[in-house]
Length: 519
Image (cartoon, rainbow, N blue to C red; front, side, top):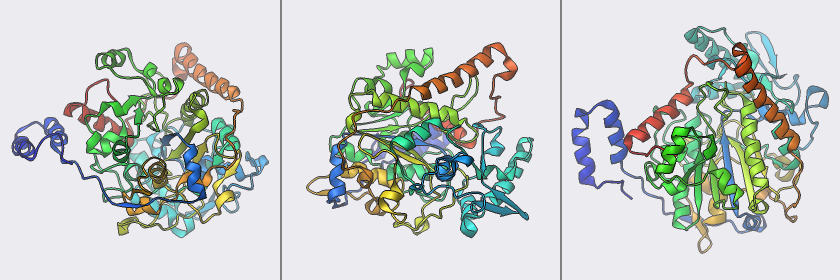
């Protein structure tokens, strides 16, 4: 498939591009780019008992958060109650300070309970580039502290802020900081063998989640604009409804040129009510459709919904970002997950919905499980990344279950498992599904984690969680109005690299012709 223009038009743009200002030239590059072809290879669809379970699912909802490891967020579940844990024996989480530690500069840094839900500066955002992840995983996952110590010291000097404690990356949260996850872990399925797809940065992992491959590097490119064919193309071919919901332009637009500047029906805001007055007005002028929360309440969820969190955090009226990317406040992430969960459980679509809460990569935080090798056509991507937190939330999974208890510790998932699940459920034709990539073809689908029992008809009370998060938001608002010095958190020195990348993508897409009011 070609782009918006034919070869002659694209060549004409390129011929005069050097005469134009940089921003216009970059915008024209997006307009005139070629579309990568959609892979046409097909493979036999999985055909067994566990695959049949997928037929009970009518709606798959994916929320991909940012940069936290499994042990950092859900590892507490296996710790004793005295250490803030739940003493669960069916979760491969943290084992205790004697076993979970790193040695750096002659000192032992053991795991520790982290009570700060928001870190102070970008110096407290651990590195997660390919080279840093290699160091973190060295010596049996013994290099997390050493890597953070070197990286954070340099970053602190650059920002002129105090050098963080090297042991920060050994911190873990508990139910006190993550009440929503604690509730969902008890009521649904914890996937404790889900690894990020790449031992590297944010965008390569998001590429694997959408395209089943990266674009040649374990690190982000700047600006993060890519050109890969993605799984939504196959949904389109099969006439299966999908929608990409976001606060900003959807990440799909940055990945696949087929959705770069058009096909607006496949995109919507997460919540129209969270838009500014100006944004709402523009949306009405461009006939922007309903949001995720609207579609959910009306029982009009598409077959596949992908949710992007809010990545940018300016701290003007309190925390804006809710993606959990350090140093953002994880309480805002809890609020987002609860909002989605509550909306889904109140929806007519809930009995046949699978909600997947997943993280793109570990963000430099400690995890004790070494990633396995994997199949991939690219020899540079034959190892999975660090383990990440994943929760399967659905009336079709057993309460309090876990993947290791159901399938054993050698059975693992990665982001391409989402694609494999979607293709198997919605894109099988004559017993065959799109192959996309070698990684997707080899991935395990999520039918393995669904229950054979009838769908549960009751939803556990989560009102106290809502009360708790309303109180948190009220405290922020009260501080902002009554005590300006307490209106935490403070303005950052600058946007993080991730936030700068999203800002650049937004600007480029708008300059290239993506209308205001369309995410």
